[in-house]
Image (cartoon, rainbow, N blue to C red; front, side):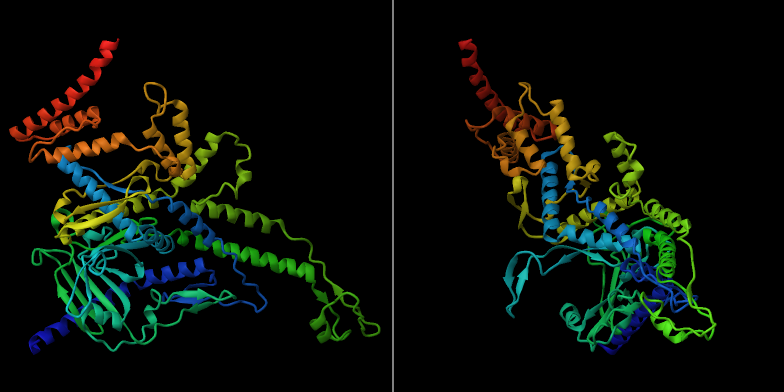
Length: 618
């Protein structure tokens, strides 16, 4: 590299670092709010933001004051996370039309999504993102192409294996994301986005081939200076990252007129590691875009980062801790007593050390007044009332009411329908979070399909879990993916528990909606019901209708190039309907149309020959 290029690279690296420091300072107060939330969830609740916006520990007014923590925020977050864990619907792809090629492409795209969700541990990634979202208000997903995953396809000269690559999904902490503007809500509307994360210098060398000295990154240990609580509830910083780490700054710039492919600049330790176009064509119509997807717990108008329910619960938690501690102090005074001693009548130091323990012999000055216990009365009812009010406010503000914890409130409701309405109203408090997770999940599916369309240039084999807990294998390449219209399977029922879904199935069974014209449940339908309610091991009947339909669809593709023979063992009624639907769904050349019509007549002849003996016998 010439001196001129080195100088330009150095200036670009310096400009990116200055841009990062500027954004970090703009977001400093928001970060401190996240740290405050994390402290309260972890149980370190005697802290607050000072006038400078820094996290500081609150001091005791008197040495004898109790400062115990009665953490009700952590159970609220646990309850909300358990409800959010129900959102794990399967991603499917809608066919662009009724054309058989589009239907086949939709089935292929759905199979790819099912395989990637399994390989990337999508459940674990969504759980990690939900935790960040619930505590900090915002979480991000990053959809990337990992060239070191997938099937091995060869070996380099140095002996390292070459892999075909596959899409990868990770949850990204909000501490790592620095937007261009804090007031732009949509992530795609941001002119640029920076992701900053601490990486070991050895990993940086593996990724970019640049050897850096490394340094101690105290301020970026465990997603910035996260505080944790010790047994006494005081703040403590987590251990620093050891020397040998460096801060990697990735600045993504969206496509513009001057740079239609966008720009990605990577800097670490003042060194330019990469500068080029955005790597992924993950936008609509093959455009390049950001690899990030945003998820919020509660959206905030005019803000890039969302809000967390923890922000609303912190004042209640402070009040609850104060009430409980003052209540315990009052109870201690009543149980341990407060002693009144006449000056000079007894040894005050001895009384202060031992108190008035049972059986103690008290020697006091002749003519003086003996020590006595002061009567402090009983615990004021205001403590109990305020404590109960605060607990009720916790449930109202958090939207995580639990019937098992508030059974007294519903003692007069005996109708199952009434209780279900109460549960539904309680879950409605999470509707905004549900909606954000669903939008993020569908966007993840679109990104994954677009990455395979871009990078899967050669035919590859994909193994995925099919129906009936069986594995299926398909061969495809990126050009076969023609649709990325992702939808959620059973979207309307995703918030239902497994028990609720089984109840719906039982009700449908009682209504007889699964019965055929003879009043019996077909074996195929019975198998599907057993699989749905979790007893697939009892489903031993093969779905002959589905097998015949799949065979007929395969014949449709074969007939585009030549004649296909009719098998005697085919289910000719299913084949006839499938071939007719294929004819009606799309236009075909005259030769192809005539070939399919002749094939249909052959199936109809088998059906006619089968019915003739029955007529004669009659």
